[in-house]
Amino acid sequence: MISGNSIERQWHLSEKDFFWGLTSEKQEFISLSLQRHIKKNEFIFLAGDLGDSAFYLETGEVRISRIDFLGKESIVFVRYAGEMFGLAEIIGGEKRTCNAQAITNCLLYEIKKNDFESLLRRHYPLARRVMEVMGRRLRYLGEQIENLMVCDVGTRLLKLLIYLGCHNLIDLSSLDKPMIVPVKLTQEQIASMIGSSQQTVSEPLKKLKEDGAIKITRKEITLLKPKEIFKYISA
Image (cartoon, rainbow, N blue to C red; front, side, top):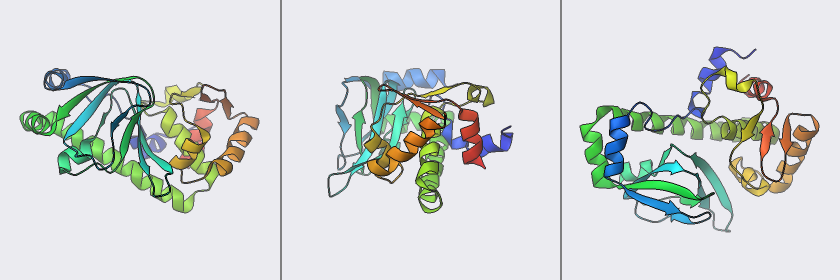
């Protein structure tokens, strides 16, 4: 069985709706924001843009990525409905260091820096939520660096699939049944998220499929044994 400590060590994988428990704050946030409909593959912002706004994703999925000097994309985060993004730049007043591109059609709300800062000053619970989210994401990035140093490609792949599949994990009960990885990524994009190449990732994916750990279709990846995978990566 997986212990509670394993879940605690993975606390940063669980991210509820940013405004969970903050109904009035969400209403005020929306009243100050611009509603935007973003089409699939459309860019929301680009690296180098002024970071003068943040975004709340109502529906859809967004990838946050960097492009290196050779033109290769490295995906840093995938943002889901209910999450905020663009926080680091709006708080620091810096230029964007990544691109944000819609994976699916999206509905989001964009709030400008001055309005967001005013909102945080009026609502301490909201300001605390920002700190919690930033801390969680910093923890995730730290773990990614550690994974690159100490984990083989197969283990990094399993950790990524769990991250993508249980971003809203609340308790152990959801690990007792197959878990669909909701975001649609190519093998090349998956490889970029774990610091590998498409050729290196295809073999572990094939082995996981042969071992009955995952199911792969043209539309999605399903983790057939998420509890066993979670136990393995949390050991």
